Image (cartoon, rainbow, N blue to C red):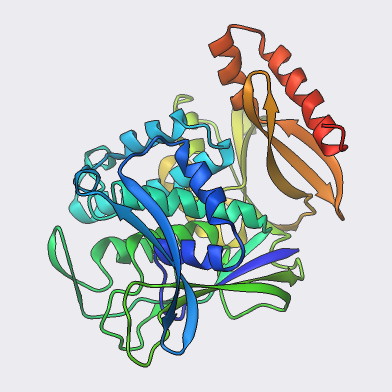
Length: 394
């Protein structure tokens, strides 16, 4: 199983993630190409080799024009921006989940609603580039599991649009709930809200370096040059045992007295909290009452979060959980050029051999609506072209 381990001895931020990914071999041009489909203007993405302390790393900078930097966006603005893009569905969904984490944290600390939050501190253009670029880079790595060390937050104060704030900043502190963190006395903001949101979404567990055969590593440089401290985020990629990644928790509850309109919202909340799958089953309970069994599959690290949602968002008085093993195919996403444009295709492999592949349905549906043709026509066409590409006849 391919593992990515983030060593956050000097915290984590969006630009450090991009730097570590590029340093580990992800092509900056691949990230640029993906970001170009967003249609954002007024920025340039650059990388350069730098030193932090005695060690070298890659610094990725998002140079934003003064006009673009002053423009802020709401979560709805960012959601529309991503959904209008031609990015693969998986990139859009992961990016939105990270922005949702940020929005909820900002809303919580400012005592407002997420639709009222303007992304000043986490960003306009620069944060969108950091987050979406980071998601593109992580998907290029094609890892099965992400783990991380405890996070070094730094300490002292940080100056921002809201004034001088303590480190960790309030939004960062909200995002760090449930994550082991510490400060070793360095008087800088080492973990930013963006970094905390990204690693909180990706990492299944926060622990020491697992047993793994190391293949490559990368070092992403932070902005601060700190004397006698290597301000670098390290990513280590390698092959490891599948013990943690093949464990899932099944959390379930039976509901017979809830408004059916609520189920859609609850499913969205569960997926936002990190659920791998959510499904509903019709069951009969005592006294022959028709009911719905809610089943949630989640990584062990997300059990508490999904359990909290079931206990607070539904009418249940209790839940049950079971730890399970699972076996999964290696999953990748590729793009296929079709007469309708580029379409994402999911590919499942076992020991390097392709077992299954399927076009992304949402991509096919959008094309069918735009071209006013049957979705089956689009789907079958993409399927044939994907098969040719995978068998070398494309």
